[in-house]
Amino acid sequence: MRLPNTRSIPSHGLRALALATALALGAAAMPTHAQSLPAAAMSTDGTLLSVSAQAETTRVPDIAHLSTGVVTQAADANAAMRANAEQMTRVVKAIRDAGIAERDIRTSGVNLSPQYRYADNQPPAITGYEARNTVDITVREIGELGEIMDALVAVGANQIHGPTFEVDDTEGAYDEARRAAIEKARARAAMYAQTLGMQVRRIVSISEGNGGFGPPVPMMAMARMEKADASTPVSPGESTLSVNLDVVFELGR
View 1 (cartoon, helix red, strand yellow):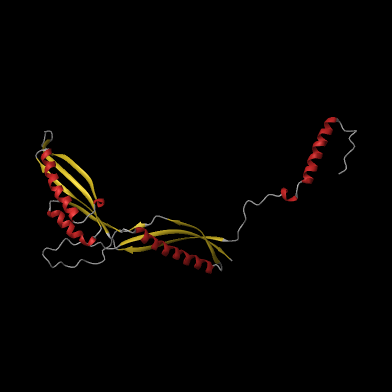
View 2 (cartoon, rainbow, N blue to C red):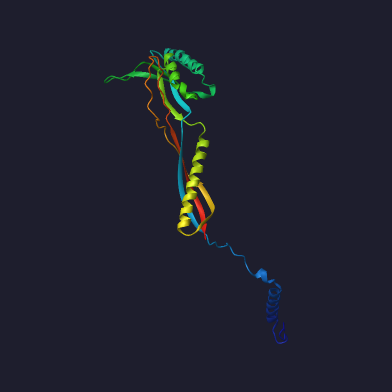
């Protein structure tokens, strides 16, 4: 590089010229690849396709939940609680005798409340007390459920709510539905790709939405009981478990 004659340049001009020269020399020494910036993102020629798929599976419930207990009334609170405790002790013993494990027996409420008599122009008057004791139990042998309920009533239970049914191994059932849903999504993506003259390259993402656990649906009517001492008939029916998937595919030529 040829430098100009510096004799005719003022001092402040010399400083500016020196700075410009340094910048020029630095730029000349800089490698060519350092002057270019990498691309922020590589473009793709693929097409993204979002597919929703839903699949269901059915199971016969193998667990039943039941709430049972005792309600007693007496003139005073102490008598109501004592009578309730005596009956409830027999009920709990019957539950254990039926083979229900301790982990499947849980007290859900013990209540004592006054009973009132109402009359016109008079304040409410307490006429007695009502005691309640309720336990929730899980029955893992559904075939014995009717006999268990009858046994509870026989020893003094005067409250029964339920049963409700559920499937113990829900994850296994949901996995079966998941596999069916992903196969549905693949088939649908292949149909779109074929229609567009393209191919399915890969799955970009999978999102699982809220599935569902349908209430039991009776499979058949219970047969008529011939014996006079037959237990309470119970039918668990079938439960439906569903899975919803949102799958994004990449299509290409």
